[in-house]
Length: 298
Ligand code: AHZ
Image 1: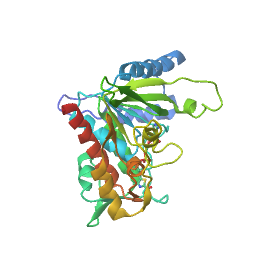
Image 2: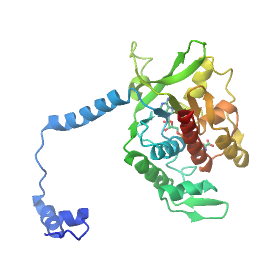
Image 3: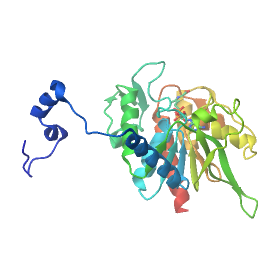
Image 4: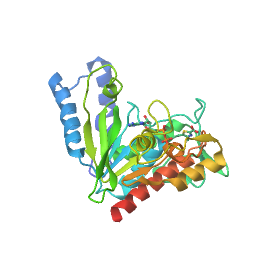
């Protein structure tokens, strides 16, 4: 197979139709490899990343729809910032793989549809809202946009199990980083003696851990237990019209150094839940990114 300089090179052309037929005819061969090469390829990258990101510019806690919308907005606008996402689950995406009640379509109220155009997700327009044919199309596209950005690192299967809080000479407390552990370790603190964590420091932390649950509302609850907030507001019942604007407009720096977004904010502020409509999560994530940018510019 020969390619001229004028022709665009595609993967299919590089493999070649004839080669594919030949390769899949019982003679498919891989380049040889040693097992240690596979281990070292992963280990080297993982621990180099941990080493480099021990000091980050922004840590985003939670890779649900709010956290990922924040990551994309922030990291695409400021390629100079080291944005590190910590996600407790093996699969990033939080609750955004389904539209609601295990159904597939995802509803997004306007004006958050502009974000879909920005990341290139097709939708059907139903007037006041748009519908993406499958929530997984939104989440997988957003994830791929986020992970394609060279300044973003995602550490999944890793839990934020505490916040770093520094006190300055005036006695002012400021969230200055996160305390991390592999999730499987974090889940076993009751069965093993002390398994100490690692840390990541950053001037801005964005917390988007979702509403209360086995893992959710982590920072909102920790702010109370460490005395940086008096009490939890606790998420109220479902009201779509009140909840989405409340979450987007309420997205802010809730404690020095800590921006809160997404449904975690409903637990912090005592606002309503919205159920399966995702414009509020996108809007809140985008606003959290702008809050973080404002903190860098201040
Ligand atoms: O695994 C969690 C999920 O992926 C992750 N997470 C939680 N605690 C963590 C911790 N360390 C690291 N301590 C942690 N990661 O955070 C992610 C939260 O995603 P989510 O989808 O649950 O929250 P969100 O605020 O991005 O989106 C909420 C979506 C909802 S809930 C809802 C309702 O109940 O009415 N409606 C909508 C649209």
